[in-house]
Image 1 (cartoon, rainbow, N blue to C red):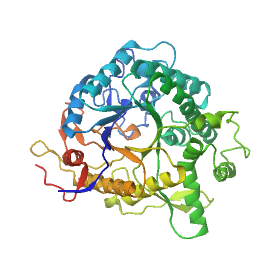
Image 2: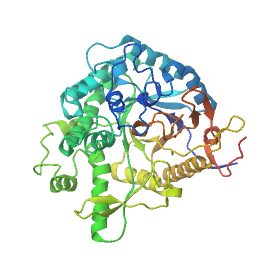
Image 3: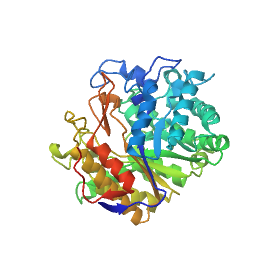
Length: 458
């Protein structure tokens, strides 16, 4: 039985990233990435694992495309490993790496699946980090050169390009909080990193268009609905601050051509800026960043409820008991998804929106008769797809939805302890096993609608 339908031409896909699934870390000329180095450093990754093998997608990509065909999806969002293409991040391209992505793209097209290629899903080559990484403007040039190399090779077949995935995570988690690669704790550097990521996006867009005729180009940002814990002025200001740090600091320059003045003042007040100006912004940067794009990618997982801390900074407040959270500790909040989508359409008016990631990590039981029951993930997908449908009805130009993730993978600093996949992966045998969520998503794709009643899968 089908309920809410999606528009004709709506794309249903799944998403992954190179560092999380490819493995083959030292094969065919691949260079070291910042995440390889980070994972090899003691106490950085929760289970002390690495992504050296991960899902072994480098060797098993044909079988993984078969999983996509089983789902019936018509799009696949994946990333290319920068250090697989350019082992030191610059210089001569690695033919073996380019040939792998040739094979993958051709395999997708043969299966009737449209490739959505993300150039940078956090895995900066380690050699570039040692030269200053994203804190250096030289890395902007290196990224544009990387975009040129890859789009010259694949631009005849890849027509949907995403420059960066979630710049907030690279800047804040990687350079201010030290929780992600490269593991630094420098708030001033984090602001430079954010700017250089945005600038490299803006400068890469015309290169991608020149090398890939008729292509659509955009950037993916993670968004949350920032809400105040109470009606107090202090808590409302805390929500404003967090929204500025997490959402507007990236969307305003991309879509409007400026950094928000109130957030600049917050950075100065809290010591991230030595003076109330942005020394890393050069003439022409903001114009380059705000280059018109064809879509905006949105990743959504949960909302953020904020109260004012003792120093006025925003502090997150739990809004659900532990048993109602995902394994990442995130509240399940489809209304926040609707709020994010409608807010983006209202405040920024992108031509198109793609939900480039949405999903949940839960503990999955053993398989029974070759199938894994994951009712909480099914419900997460169902309620969020219904929220997406409501957003379309409210006027959001939503063109597609990519479930995170096709399969369980190496979840960054969480290692193999968190599982988001529609398919389970036994990381010893590399066997893939369908979950009920895979069957549910297959039904959504086939009906082009969300079922009003979830079937009993067996």
